Structures are given as C-alpha cells and as structure tokens.
Length: 109
Length: 115
Image 1 (cartoon, rainbow over the protein chains, first blue to last red):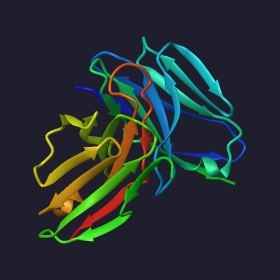
Image 2 (cartoon, helix red, strand yellow):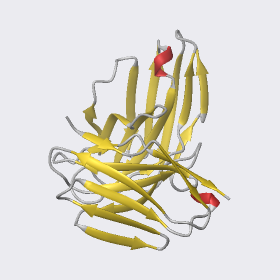
Image 3 (tube, rainbow over the protein chains, first blue to last red):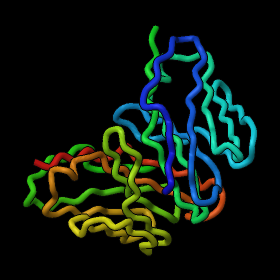
Image 4 (cartoon, chains in turn brown, red):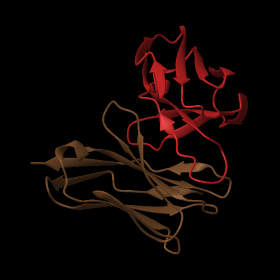
C-alpha cells in the first residue's frame, strides 16, 4: 500500500533549527509537498520538490531524496508563529496526493 | 474576496438532520476538492470536481452528496450522518488534477459535530 510517515509531534526552542522528516512509499512519484496548518486555519502551501536536492525559501528549506523515498523540512531561526502542524504529501503515478498525518511542532520560548 | 471561503465554520447536527456545507473560490481554478480531516489522521480525499464534472469519488458513503453548480462553488450535502462523521471538512481548489505542482489552496474548514 501507499504510505507517508512523519513524526506525530516535535518540540523546539525559539531561535533554534528543527528538521521534520517524511518518508514515503508510493506507486510511482510525481513530487512531494509540504503544507503548514495553524490550529483552526487552512493548510497553506510551503514547498514542492520533484528533483533531488535542497530548495531554500527564506527561513524554510525542503530536501528530497527520490532514491531513499525521503524528504525533510528545515526551519531555521524558529519563531513562536512557526508553532503549527506540518503536512507532508507525495503525488503518486496517478497524480493522486498521498498525505501524512502531520507533525505538530511546538515552539517554546 | 480572494482565496477559498467555507461556510459555516462550525456546525452541530443530529443524526436525522439535513445540512449543507458551502465552498466558494475566486482564484479562477478549475478543480475543487472535498477533504475530511480527523485528528491525528491523514487528510482523506472525498470528492474531486474538474471543470464542474466529478472525476473522483473515494468510496464515500451516500450520506455525503456533493454538488458543483459552477467552477466557483462547491457544496457538500449531509443527511443522516453518524457520530464518526464528526471531523473538519476542508475544501480546496487547484489549477488542475494532473502533472506539475498543482498547488492546492484550502479553505479554513467547516468543523462538523454529529450528536
């Protein structure tokens, strides 16, 4: 079956760096997405990777290794507003999105 | 108004009630989606409409009935629901259902509680 694994919850300190991992098993692969969802709000798009490597976007970076079925989201200089759930999703050979259950990130002062 | 708007934001209904969730997008997207989000579970795709035609129905019980009257509006009609249907229902829109990034824009969701 198809599956996305990511940690349920992580805690980090304001100003620090945190890496949220995501492993995927899909029938074919057509890209990997990261979304951010604050409590009670809509998920919002953060990044899309389809080729191996690191994509940097300000304080947030996303990495993909297709051979390992692995991605991570790296958040630098953490701010309290980064407290949210981070959703990983992979697109399979039928262009269907397979979602992980999300990682709740708690930022402490 | 821009983005994806969902109403109502909160809904409490009994198992014998009939209610509807509404979604509206003003982004010019041609695909619209209904997802179910339950705590600590992956998003579950329920329905997909592309160019106002239903292109996907993921074995959703018939007590959920979607309607897409035009490319900007999407409804989810609810009747004789069960307590296990209590969840956050998210609407999303996108520019296509195939190749490429096709980033989804989500609404804030309708929190449904079935008593």
